[in-house]
Image (cartoon, rainbow, N blue to C red; front, top):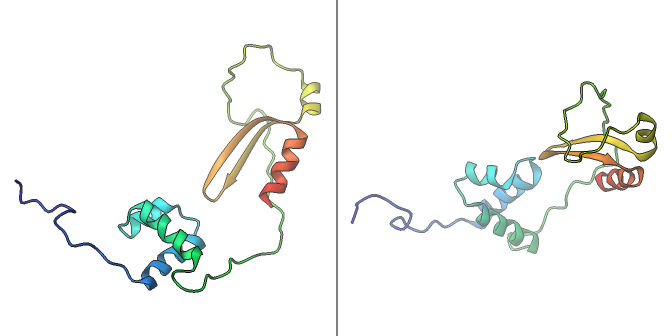
Length: 136
């Protein structure tokens, strides 16, 4: 048997309620992922998710209400088709006429948020409206 130090040989770590509350509130107020906060504090992401659930149950004291800001407009930037990202097409159909694109919706849409980005193709006007409502 090896004399290496493994997690099984080390004493179990215990964290105070104040520490758990501090870490969870840090997770909630920052635009960082669970994995990033877990790495910073040498915790397992599942442990942090459990602490977050317990926090919302009120096990670490009164839950701080989330800061609710006034509704605001989202920044939108239009990019010319020539400079837009190339998109691989899986359909083997001829290119659409430019007049039909204007009536069907948005050809390409990129949404960039604090925790990631999303690229959509051929978004109709109704779906675009629902997306804008969901992002409010």
